[in-house]
Image 1 (cartoon, rainbow, N blue to C red):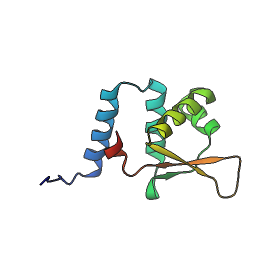
Image 2 (image 1 turned 180 degrees about the vertical axis):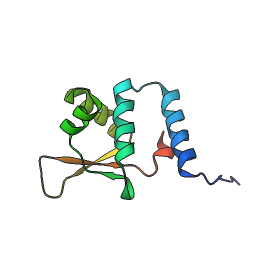
Image 3 (image 1 turned 135 degrees about the vertical axis):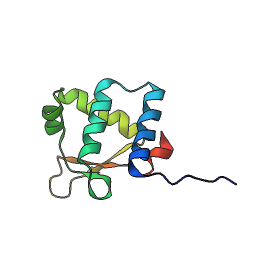
Image 4 (image 1 turned 90 degrees about the vertical axis):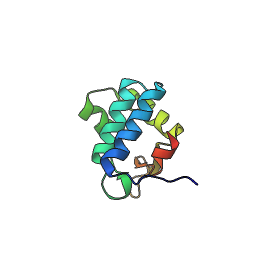
Length: 102
């Protein structure tokens, strides 16, 4: 029988980041995008922000943001959610089970 240690939020984020680092398949820009989105997440890990805003706020190109979000979505760390009022825009949901996926 496995016994799971209950982690506080800091320990959980630390564990996720440590596992992502050990995989070593993510670029610096992918980490920057992930941490920026993580820093903005509030209720239910949901972030409503567009690619252009992310790129401007962390000083990388829009193409780099698209590439990073595509990789994070492929690894099931982020999920793209259609914006409710603007169909051209995509919102992001941080997978609440990300700790088990990484």
